[in-house]
Image 1 (cartoon, one colour):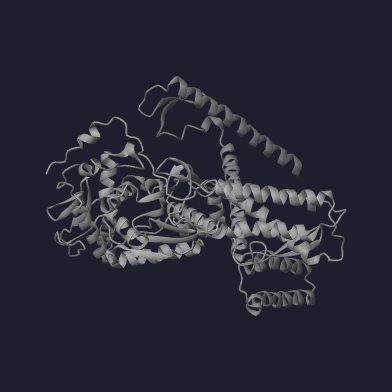
Image 2 (spheres, helix red, strand yellow; image 1 turned 60 degrees about the vertical axis):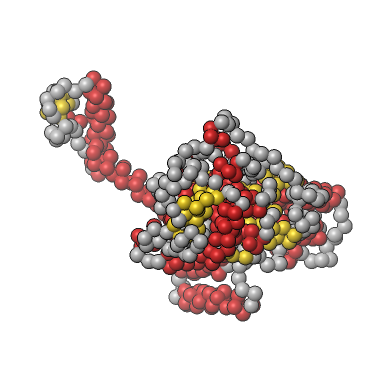
Length: 633
């Protein structure tokens, strides 16, 4: 069989996205950026009500999950939570696991283990990472190895419909036959015919020589010696990559699905091939109504790559930042746009988190300490603040309906916090507790919808156990140990040790227990905080202090090195460098290199400058010696 490019593709200079068919029913207020139209369109569920079907491409499990994975799974977790917990949709969320694939086979061979052992190891690791990132588990999980019979049946139907063919034990999708009655490449028409993308989609172990057309792709691969295999009407083999998602998604969600999501890099060929397979199988014009894609993740402005040594696993990121901080980073960026992960971007996130944290602490402290008997009648300043709350609610609602715009929603909440802080800064009147409570409760609610808050209390919470004894035991143990230290120091009249113990309790002990103490004008204020957040703050503080110390030592080293160098007379500066120079002038400046060639004019100028600088530094050294001698006399 030949590998010719489709004449249909050759005849088209520019391919554009085909018509998108609006789902029947009354459109909702929600606008979604649909990759099938490259524009925002109203969301209309197939159910006509609140039930929504959603399929998300899961990982190919052969290695540790990285921040690129986090970009997709956190972003879609946020959208899922908004739809479910804010907009009231009943979302059925299905995720697949690709546990047999060319990459898995190659990696398992390298490590001398079975593909099942490798895939199970990294699948478990993947879900551990998602749990650590507070990503909700799927409502159903589909593994390729558990769906092979359904995949075979799915492929048989495509063949029967005239859109696939068997060749030497493999089965290929017939793009030429498909394009006579369907549109191929709905998501990225311009990528159709791209040999590099087609090759990457087929996998490193695919031969490809049995295809009729370069654009055709494998639905079923004949297994070679040593590869995993299953029985089929075409002989022993294994599923192609794209067919897996079509068969598994349709098996649970049916022939028409509301939402399909994945990373930007999956548009072509993976998602476009999924669409083609499924529409060929069902004989329909629109298998998926809304395709949504997450934007690329950059590391310090560059594409993540092991060769660039900027490959960051989720576990790497969690060692430096909390799950809440990582999630906040995604919230302040549009989910469908490129975003940058860097020290600078995370520093910005930490500042935003701190604004919310300090606000919650302030409100809880006021509500806790202020007597209810104080005046609570509303004056104009109170009405203005309440109006700000109502306006923020309206803005946030509009933002979330506009393609899940969490970026501006977070900014709106931040503005409300700043406005409230100005309100609280007026010490001449007591704040109205009900308004403060309403603002803090609303902000907490939205942050809970975004997956930043657990539990029902106001604020981020301390992340501790609900059991009082379990929560207080480590704190009380620390206080008992602190008392023993203070008592011993007082008996020995070691007052400096008492102050050291106080600072140690504040800076090293209590933060690891979820308690933060702020010293303000001699008065200390305690705050409950997530101990993981405080732990990361301590680590960051130590990292900054360690860098300052390293910079100080490096500066001292250079100064010492400069001082030792200043002891050498300028006339002797170059004469020992016989490996570089062979002749010198009367001052000691090199005139010829080691081969005897004259020094170039530009190089000579640099050497003369270095000579003059050394002469000045040596004179300063001599002057300092003379001054020291005079002082001693």
